[in-house]
Length: 315
Ligand code: FAD
Picture 1: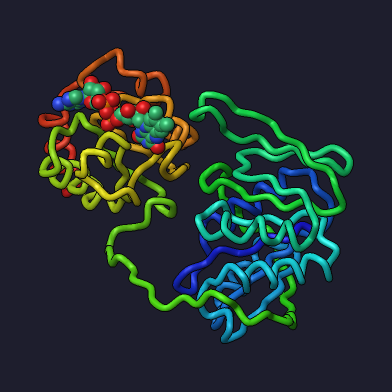
Picture 2: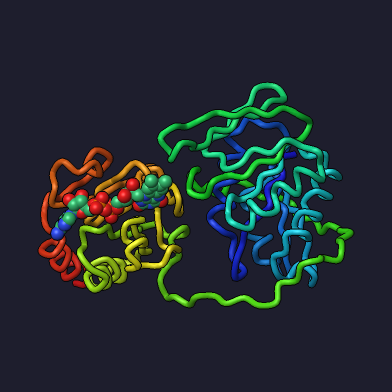
């Protein structure tokens, strides 16, 4: 089986899980697509997952109420072993990349990190991933009865519902974790999360100031119900938090529409959003590299164009 560890939050299946289902379907690896749902009170997540997988294994336990690397690794390795998984897929989120290597060690399996494409022949699995500041895409290959891989979020299109998987409760023997999560603070925002958004408005240095960013980028995003992204230049200048950074050292996104305001389109930015379905760019420099990837472009000043767009959108 191909075992996918579901990523979920607030009782909802994460988009990254649907992306992993696509990765599994495209990978050519053998066996039923199996979703493993770890957590406490995760019935809704398991029900939602059943529409995408051949089967759903559910470990609904109070000990799994919050993410803990030791528990997630132990649970995943145990299920992979019992089900003789050929492939274990874990989201390339911060937590996924924390516990995935532990799973590989427990299974004595090769580990491929941050895959943006997966193919296979025979027992070998090839993963493409970015290297050298995302200027180069390398292909790495692993072979073995079981291979652990993390999938870079935003690199595969989310799967469409196409299954009616059976659900099974699983029993686990969990260790006593040596690390305890003692607190968690979640930033509250009414805006859709960047990695979940179907439309993203991103601001670059060209918007001019943090105040303009609030008026133009947030203003347009709120008018059309979009998520907010930023370039590294903007984050480095302290205008916006790192959580909003899109690009090689930020988040990878693949929304239906990506609206770039005052963004030059540096290669490290493009590597994080280049697979968006439609790219719309506004930049006063007609030679800006962003126009090479844009489906629609306006050469002009954001100060003039964006307020007019917001006014139109609010109508
Ligand atoms: P600029 O390159 O300064 O571009 C501003 C643009 O705004 C220009 O094209 C200009 O014509 C336009 N403009 C100016 N005024 C106006 C106006 N009034 N109206 C309309 N347009 C206007 N960058 C990322 O974004 N994400 C990353 O993850 C990332 N990782 C990196 C990792 C490494 C190792 C390195 C070396 C760099 C990385 N960078 C990353 C930085 C990247 O190389 C660029 O420096 C950055 O993306 C530029 O941001 P920008 O487009 O906002 O700014």
